[in-house]
Image 1: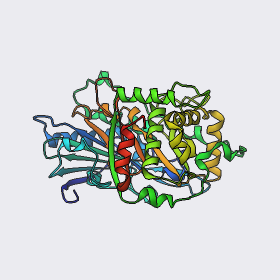
Image 2 (image 1 turned 90 degrees about the vertical axis):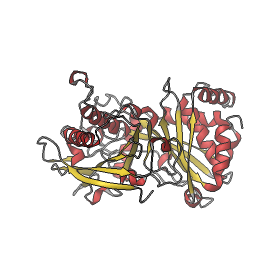
Image 3 (image 1 turned 135 degrees about the vertical axis):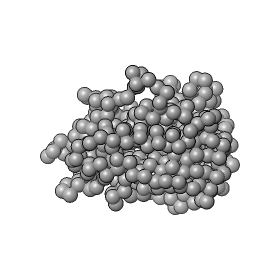
Image 4 (image 1 turned 120 degrees about the vertical axis):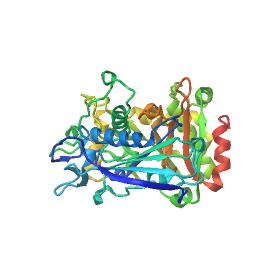
Length: 440
């Protein structure tokens, strides 16, 4: 696909109205070392008969400029604070980037399956910002016209500025402004809230943190050259779980729970445990290799008082389930579901305060050995983002790598989940076997 996408135009888009010129401090959670990358969404829209492509591109550029007025930090530049820990945003209306391109080969239906390679869809977001601290724009939007008249809208947003919920709020704002078919009186735009000081450790106050309560930051022994084992020769995979399959997983989880364990699990808990177990069994780790499942937990309503509505900064901490490869395989999906459930239950106000101190003062960062990361995009509402092209037909990442994503699937009940992750080619067949056989 490297030569199949042609960029027509790349533009720097600045806010459509004057915005504050200032320097804004990012929070302790925003400044974490492991968040210094770009979230990359890919939304694919079915063909719209009679669509005026030049007008649509102009409409999206105008909407982006208008969205950058309330979200003006997205038009700024991120840098380390000159004094002390953390990051800050220099806001001077430097601008975001908008790209219009044409794909000579791809159609909407080509996105029904996983890409053939990890980077096959990379040209659909041709400006990849690997390090936002080098002065690159934190926001890039690319509109690519596919050969059948369909459209792909790829968005790269730097994770330092927002989390998944915050990025979805921005995209909804952008979409409302771009969608001419909606009456202004019906626009559901949420006013964005900065207020990053709410998630900074109190000055001069340090919390005594027990590392045993934060396995997400601890290191486990590497017994198998872990990173080479899970990162070499990756093949993207995509498997959908509908309501029937999710209910079957819950039934199996109830039957394989530990004695005395609460038998009611959410769809996320059982699916995360099932993916974790299938992935581990397919790759074949030594039985005594410690493994972790790491996932984000929204803390907006776990703090007292809660964060204000419209807060779009990073407002999550990492949940971490941990066990050995042998226990994960032998004890079944109910055991894994219990680990995930207890990891979620550990998170409260004090836990969040400890994490802020850990990442702010100690520069705490998760170690990748033994880790499978799961990110739940299926609850962000991305499938409902309508920029005037209808609702998104496909939602996924620009690149499918070893980080596992739970993606939304458009169905009648909106409960199905697509699991996308890249696994070593040698493990693909077994991974599919275990994922499709919840009783094994």
